[in-house]
Image 1: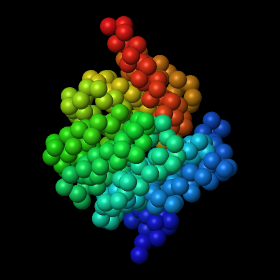
Image 2: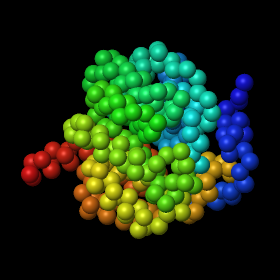
Image 3: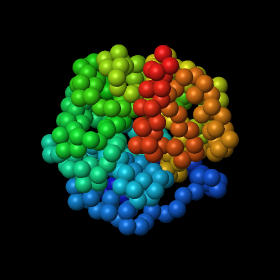
Image 4: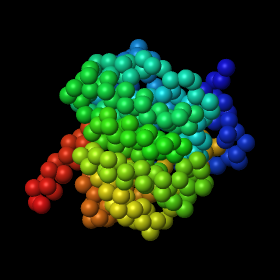
Length: 316
């Protein structure tokens, strides 16, 4: 029985990698330790419903702030991923069989938390013929039934080893936001995201809009992995060519010494410059700060995203 709390068993594919030093975090990247009544209440609901969250599994620095407000990002289809990305803290290996009752538990937790907006993500499930597409669709439908007033944002895998019908199944369930992260610039894919393909992920986002133009599309990257400004700008251009609405950019934080090294800490001023540049390229919404993560302030950002679309339509 694997103990997923032990790094060597959590990431067996990284166990023999050389250590990378973890530099001290600058003042602008430090956060308070999680705690308080709201945090405890959210944790209790997640535990009672036997749900996994990416907040915990990926070691998100914002977990204290988000959970204190009842905002937890559900991670469906288990806690073990079939990929071994060098930046990611989610456990790697052979996943368990799908839990048919999980969509209902997610929906019940969303209702009990009283969420106006929920983010639902998953591990990669390359072991499944549809990559988990139907499970995503069932979860969306369950939330719609139990909490009809809640807007739904999904953060999906790339469905790389599936036929085109996998994406069609998810889109047909009509999430409000379809997010798939490019994670980094294409030149770093072999090192950072070896199991993925940059242009496949880009095409996935483009195809969502072709299937249903009403769905907002969203994608994000990390910086501080070794990219340069020109390559980040090129990713922005590629996303806009794929009609992506919402861009997130955040600082990469190294989970353990066995993970990809931090090249540098990008300053808040550089993030502000990225944000200005992205808005200039036509994104409806941009979040670019050191602590930005895909689901950080997602509800508030969705409201601004919807307002931005309405304003654009009014101008046209």
